[in-house]
Length: 196
Image (cartoon, rainbow, N blue to C red; front, top):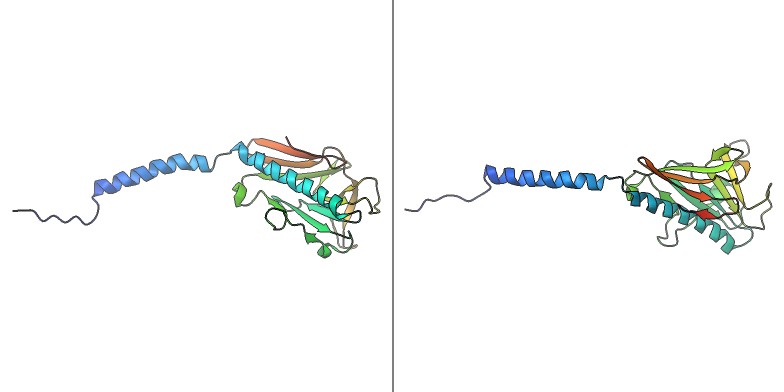
C-alpha cells in the first residue's frame, strides 16, 4: 500500500536553510551598499564643479547685464539662480535650469543620489571669513568692487537684500567630505574652477 503523504509546504529544515542563505546574502550586501566609496566623492566634486562652471558660462553667454547667484546656505545643497537683468528682489530670480535634466540646478549631496553620506561646506572667502553666497556678474554690471565674482553674507531685512561682503578672494571653493576623506573644488578670483 502506498503512503499518502501531503506535499503542501516546506519542512522546518528547508525554511531554516533559506533563512540562512538570506542572512549570508544580507551580510555581504550591507557593507557594499553603505561603503564609503571614494567614487561618490569624485562624482559629487564633478557635479559641484560643473554647476559652478555652468553658472559662469551662462552669465558670459547671456550677456553683459546678466547675473547668476550661487547659494550654498542650505546644508547639503548648492543651488544656482539667474536673472537676465541682474535686478530686482530675491523673488525675481529664477532657478537656473540644468541643461541635462531640465530641472532646477541644485547639487544635492544630502539626497538619495549620494545616500546622504557626502558633507558639503561652501566657502566663498572674503576678508578671511567663509560665506555661502556668490554673485557672478556680467561685465556690464556696475558693482562696488573690481571683478565679476562677489561674496554676500546674510539677508538684511532692513534693506531687503543680502549683505555685500566684497570681491571673491583666494581659498574659495566647496569642500566635500565622505567619512575621513575630503576633496575641495576650488574657484579663484577670476572664475577658474578646479577639481582635485
